[in-house]
Structure formats: structure tokens, C-alpha cells
Image (tube, rainbow, N blue to C red; front, side, top):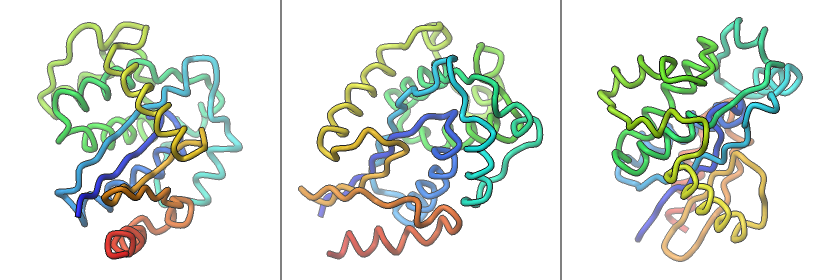
Length: 200
């Protein structure tokens, strides 16, 4: 049996942040399962999640938010550099991608780091001993980030939705869109759902 997990997300999206907890639960239960993390780059500096959406995520998930982030939740977000970094990490060191994304989201949503210039990434680069090239920190999307967008477009055609975050489990030739909303308050509970699909 061949199984893989696909996660379409935006690093600056609070719903994606809550869903990353589910991805971590699945990874803990199935550490050998290949994971494909694709950054959709929804936030380009022109929009924010907004206080109403963030308050909803607070009430409907198990993740924590810092007070400064909550106070700034109406400030427009730009995930371009984060998408570039995640594209590069996913390409060069895929085994680190989920750990880097988790650290990046915690720093953004708890410490209110915007990740809009190179200095914002220094702690993560040091923590994971990363040496990303200069192109990661340019304001336009890198080739790795654009490649992920191409993969996302193909997947969205298959699953017939552009909604994100999206979590898909591929088992041999079967693709299952996991209903992540059911597990946001209890991230570990999604493991049972994945196990059922693997055994179906």
C-alpha cells in the first residue's frame, strides 16, 4: 500500500495554522508517510484574516494566539517570503518542511512576527541550520513557490474546490479529502480517521 498526505495552506492563514496541528498528529502517528506541503500564497500584502475570522479560529480550534497578533489581526499580511522559504525547504530538505512550517506559524501567530524581511527569519534559520539563498528573501515569488502553485492548481482540479486549507490523503490510486474541521479542537482524533482510510 502506498500512502501520501497533501496539505494546501497559507503560512499566514489562521485556519491553516490550526490545521497544521492535525498534520503534526498524522506525522507523529505515521512518520514514514510522505508529506507534500504546498503554500498557496493567499496573503500578498493586500488583505488580512481580520479579527472576526481569528476570533472564530480561537473558539473552534486548539491553537494559541499571542496578544499582539490578536490586536493586529486586521493588519494586511504578506506571506510571499514565507512561501519562498517553504518552497525552498520543501525542495531541498523536505524532511524539515513540517518542522519549519510549525515553527514559522508559532512565531507568526504567537510572537506576531510578520516575516516580511530577511531578519524575521533569522531565528528559524539558526534553529534548523538553514542557509537559504538570497532569492528566498526577494519580494516576488521564487521558482520553488511558483512550482507549488502549479501543483496546487492540479490538485484543485482533482478535488473540485479552491478552498484552503485542504488536507488530502492518497491511498494507492484513491484520494480522500479529509474533513479537517471535525478535528480542530482535538488534533489527535484525526489519526483514527486516517487509519480507517488506510485500512479501507
